[in-house]
Image 1: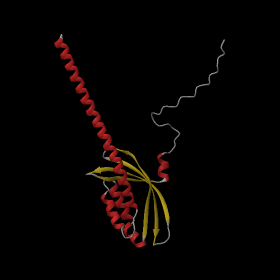
Image 2: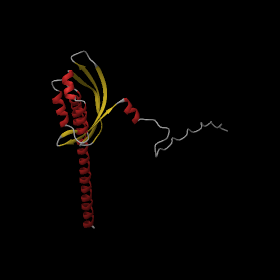
Image 3: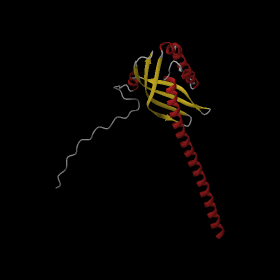
Image 4: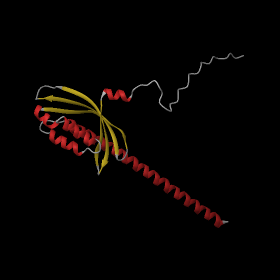
Length: 198
């Protein structure tokens, strides 16, 4: 009887130890995953702010350098879209010819969603533009999102979406029909009248 009890205690101790090791391993993995995701959120946000400032802020002296720097952080669908925009508008030559100065002020920015190696960042910025050294021509408040992916330790932009008032309205367009799978709200219940005690 003594031997059997001892074996049961040893077996129970082994089971508890294995369970503790499994739980500790799982919790350690989840903690590390969460920590990496948080680091990615911070680093992608900082990168996106810098990229927006470089991409949309320039002077006649640095526009060529800013366009080249912006192209280096673009990949996927964002790269040909940006190159097409720069080429169609003759951005570099027009900025130099018209002495355009574009200053960017990031009003606010935040990460919409992210994982350890992907991120979507929403940026609110003001772009003030002057031409030919004259007084301020215009200030454009802008909202944009950068879809980003981390490649070889560097955040790259895979998508750029400039959000205008019209594009925002179309995304939240009201319809009279409920979306598929929607459950209607329950009807309000009729008020109950107190029953006299009797």
